[in-house]
Image (cartoon, rainbow, N blue to C red; front, side):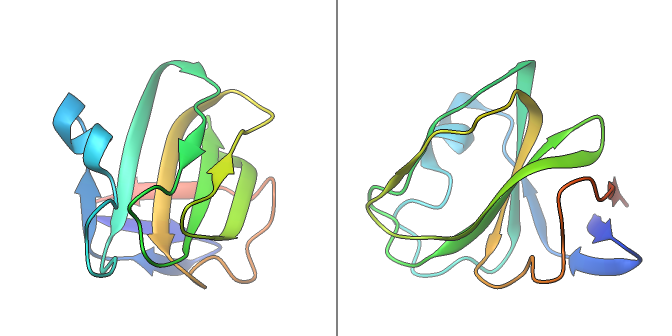
Length: 111
């Protein structure tokens, strides 16, 4: 599975977090993040994020209808973030992955 934006591969290692346990764990207690984590949001809504027990910064994209509607670069350990818009997908990346990406860009996720 690959995540692309602007004809650039953002991630070619992806973990799709579908179960309640995968969603609850996210990046917590990992020594580092070596892949993108995809979290579906159904129904679409605002999901507050926390970085408790995540010991490194990450980048986060909030997606609706395959378009970036919000982003959080360098989301720091032991902080909180409350998005302003409803998303249908949230994607977490290793820090500095979403450089040169902007609101409104299209995201594609494919095999």
